[in-house]
Length: 170
Image 1 (tube, rainbow, N blue to C red):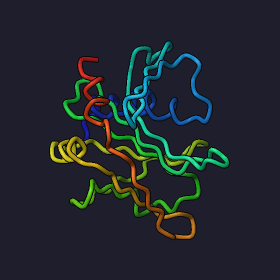
Image 2: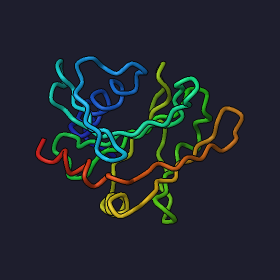
Image 3: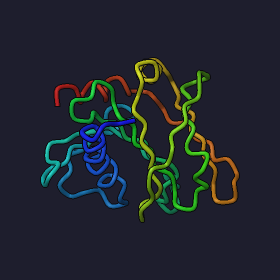
Image 4: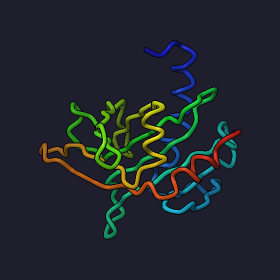
């Protein structure tokens, strides 16, 4: 269980790296840099100016509808990144979101809240999961849609190490 300070830091990070980047329109004041299959994004102004994170977003080409988004950043004082995961509204939430790097152990993230941009979960990376992300090729993601059918996606981990290393010292 998180203590009050850690919970407040997590809330601030959720606001900084989940709510802002999930909107369909890119923020005008954000600075983005592609790093292989990831995008590094930094807030340009406001309360979270200078806070950076990395992300990948999977959408339908025809409509731009969100299929899945993953963002990673360091919470204040955090040694390992916090993952922020987003799935479409209407997903069946009780089982949460399952993450599996290549064919290794599966991790389960509980959906914390939904808003007009989708439903969002966060997962604090453990040292072993962090190492798997750095060495892995694919992140296999699954969750249930509103009809309880399994949605499965593969997210490339190509460039994850370079991208996450670009956040060190911030």
